[in-house]
Length: 385
Image 1 (tube, rainbow, N blue to C red):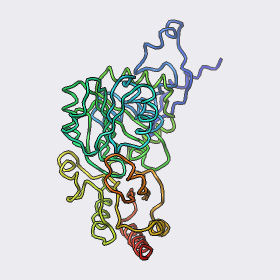
Image 2 (tube, one colour; image 1 turned 90 degrees about the vertical axis):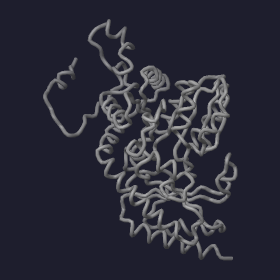
Image 3 (spheres, one colour; image 1 turned 180 degrees about the horizontal axis):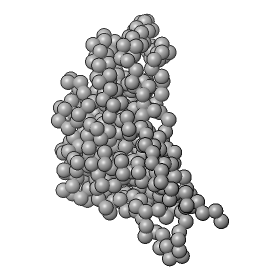
Image 4 (spheres, rainbow, N blue to C red; image 1 turned 120 degrees about the vertical axis):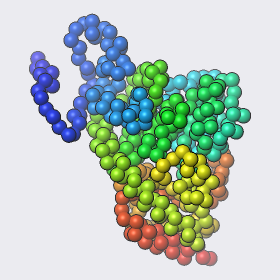
């Protein structure tokens, strides 16, 4: 049999990390094989829990987050679900932000409830008032800051402090800020989730999620959960995110500055009713953002003056520099649309109007502002009777 292990003994140095692809891990003895589970949570027993490529990425993300451990999964959504499934059981009470990622809400309300979990949505801008929702069986609080689409800012520090006193776990989706702007683990959160698809990857060509933590017991539980649920991250995807991390600080700084410039410009346009962006001084969540956060991220939303559907269609049809797409965080600017029916039907609605969400990329701001100026002109023209 060809022994490929001999290749690993050759000296080879590279600036680029190696990509290790493997389903089967081989062992030197029967004893090693029989006791292979003892290699977890860090070692290698089967490809489902990762290869050296995944471990290198996990160490890099944990270091960024100010944590001890990290587990990578195939997507941001899989990271959210894996984090919840690792600890929440039938009979538990789960608190989920009403502005958290939609698929997490669906998973909680349509799946976990069927498993006997008591799921309760809470106001996205919650702070100390969340304590009134605590029950003896409350197991976990799922937070996201700011809220997906509507951009409300919860007081994470206050919520985490209250939860710790009651031995309630806290999980924070920190994708909007990234660890460059805020570190939930340092604020006392138990789990920090990142959709590495967004800022970490940075080029709209990869799906990956990450769960970071400090507690060794949580790490062991989540590594087992990853294995049981089959949540392996592709080594090639891990490589792409490792590469993306090399340019993350430069991209984040530039995109944050560009986003603030464009948001400030939009706030002064007559057809814009409201810009939802915590980095703006008149935003409802600005005080919390200013206290806890550094840069402002690249993602924000707009509420335009009321108009018929044809005006929104004209707005999006006229865009030339902004692509239309649901994701964000990459180097290309994106625009997405969330209809009025979605706002009216959600708990704790911020508005009854449609919302436009913009992700600002690395393009010069001039062409992007010109693109939005033309789109707003088309919107106004089609808004007239």
